[in-house]
Image 1 (tube, helix red, strand yellow):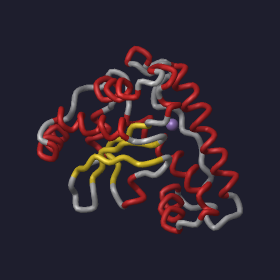
Image 2 (cartoon, helix red, strand yellow; image 1 turned 30 degrees about the vertical axis):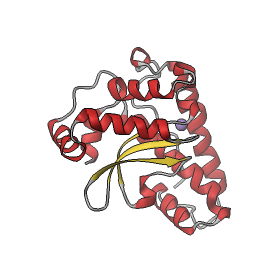
Image 3 (cartoon, rainbow, N blue to C red; image 1 turned 135 degrees about the horizontal axis):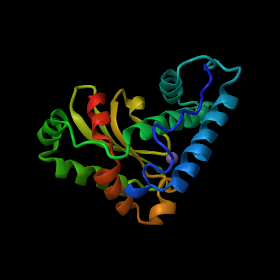
Image 4 (spheres, helix red, strand yellow; image 1 turned 180 degrees about the horizontal axis):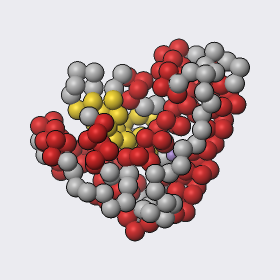
Length: 199
Ligand code: MN3
């Protein structure tokens, strides 16, 4: 099946009061995410990946390691990453579900310690990439960071929360202040119910 650009789960201006402007979402969703969808479809057409699921394309091309497939990997993974990212945020969501709070406290010592580790991973990713809260293959919760479009699927992990730290995600609203963007993301933008549902 060809990739298609999903609608945002909220209006473009729904997060403006929470630190992510309509202009950012217009560029990030309508232009950047759409480009991954369109370029991915062009590169995949007529290859062995035509008709495969986006998850199979990501893991298959990543494991092949073939340079010729890197364009397909990059666009497929960024399509998947952004689709998750939109769902992981939301306007006026409720607090953190108790089961998630308990799991984070058990794994990191406290919710605040988890947030510190997550923000440090995002701030410490040199260049473009993502930081993640993942459920690892052994069931443990971990904070990770990945470069460019690489994501937890590549390592057999479940992505519970991801934050895009490519400059296009924060430069309009936060200029070069990536740590401020990460702090705002954790305090105001995350849809913790969506994160809990992924556990
Ligand atoms: Mn992005």
